[in-house]
Image (cartoon, rainbow, N blue to C red; front, side):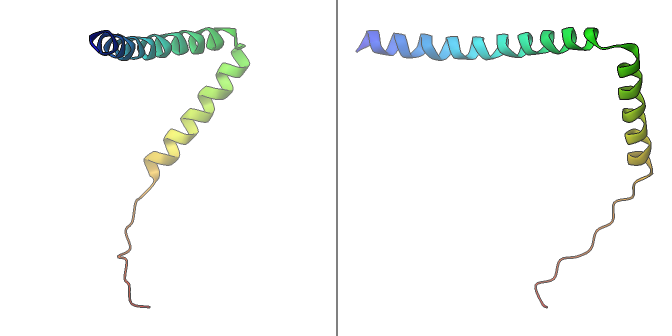
Length: 70
């Protein structure tokens, strides 16, 4: 029984450590992909994000009360 408990705890510990490593690996892969992009692709992505930022800055959120009566 003790051996099963130890294995379960070590397995859960390994899962937690692996997920952290997976996030780091994914982040490094994204950075490598970003470095492979051309200047044109970078410029187009930057302008797209800038346009989204401008439209979100101008957006107004309005709320209409919800009524169950039809």
